[in-house]
Amino acid sequence: MPSAKHLGSKLRSLRRRLQLSQAKMASELGISNSYLNLIENERRPLSAKLLIKLAQTYDLDLKEFGGESEVEISKELLEAFGDPLFEERDLNSGDVRELARNHPDLARAVVHMYGAYRSVRDSAETLGARLSQDLALPGIDRARLPSEEVSDFIQRHMNYFPQLEEKAEELWSEAGFESDDLLHGMTRHLFDSHGTRVQVVKAASDGGAVRRYEPGENRLYISEALPLSSRLFQVVYLDGMLSLTELLDQLAADRELSTPASRRLCRISLANYFAGAVLMPYRPFLSAAQEERYDVELLGNRFSTTFEQICHRLTTLRRPGHEGIPFHFVRVDIAGNISKYFSGSGIQISRFGGSCPRWNLHLAFLTPGQITVQLSRTTDGKAYFCIARTVARQARGYHVPRSIQAITLGCEVSHARGIVYADSLDLDTPEAAVPIGTTCRLCEQRDCEQRVFPPIHQPFSIDERVRGVSFYSRVMGSSDQK
Image (cartoon, rainbow, N blue to C red):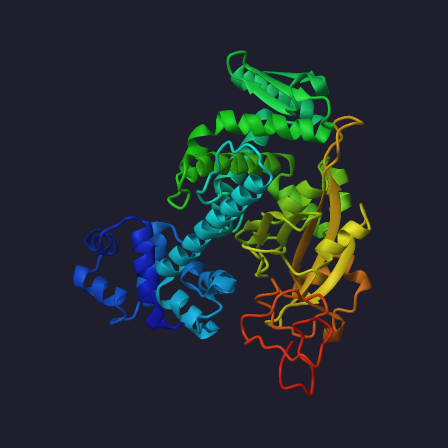
């Protein structure tokens, strides 16, 4: 818990997020307006009694007043200020942490603004590249990417949505599904509840779509290219979209989702979450995961789901009193582009650039389909255990190129003994951990042969006489770094 003198700013941020006036919040908490004003301006402490009253009145998790969010904002600010744009500014990590601690809303605004700047810059670079190639320009969206806003939304909720978990459990209870024939049961339920029929169509007959819902016909068309497990997922997804419209709208009405496209993408993500919760019900899935020591492939066989779906589901086990291991999850393509990420373990994941090439996430492409394991240590001294494996999209025919990506699932090393994949590693030898960073610009490890940019923490100078393992590495005995 941060010191009491910093809780006033957190209370002010909460009030603004709830869109309450000082008078309104003071009335609901049973205190005077002037007293609330003193607390917000750090002139009176936020007592434990009032903190509990806050949690009860606004249904809060008291962790919101802990230091975790401050740490996350600090990490994002450091990554933003790691851009070469700020190279000439004398910024240090202490200033950044002070901004995040004392002015969290302002810090979030800076991160948001930097994200918008990156989006505009990337669009401009795309425009320049296309102009140089004399290609047609249908129009470029310079708004912040909806995918980034939705990723932030999921991270703020720690990828746990209890309302959707409850709806999934209610569906199992009301429909009386048989786990060994869930596809038939869900198809019947979709028709009984919404009058929607499911029809499997030839892969080449629907313009490349693997799922298409036609409300006018009240029919769901699913491509034969999808295996049975993916067909089931699409049926449950549609049931969630049709049955939980009001709840999905309510959850997606988040003020940080700034565009209709962001809110639509959020609804899709939430419907996917619901589908995962139906296919892998919380209590049976958590029990199986703990019993099998998080053997992802075995869990996939038991619940008839894919490797990636199991990894996704493992990151959502956050029910109070019934938690699983707090995992992080990242998915990249072979070019290193991060398409999905979530950090439940606390590891910092790059939002605005590439990730560390030492991470086994990238090495997974060298051994397609095989699980690789890694014990790693970040520059802040924390150790993590990760598994990584490539996943391939379903084949849509011999002549259609297959998309291959790599995903990693990891946790703090303190949880690794509960994971079957860690059995072959010596978890008690810190020297065995691979040193990794977030991105080169933020990493302080100067002796890395794979470094491609200088770190922002130290000035960059060149000595023409000496070269280290990389152009930017420090050389012992040299007055300069290179």
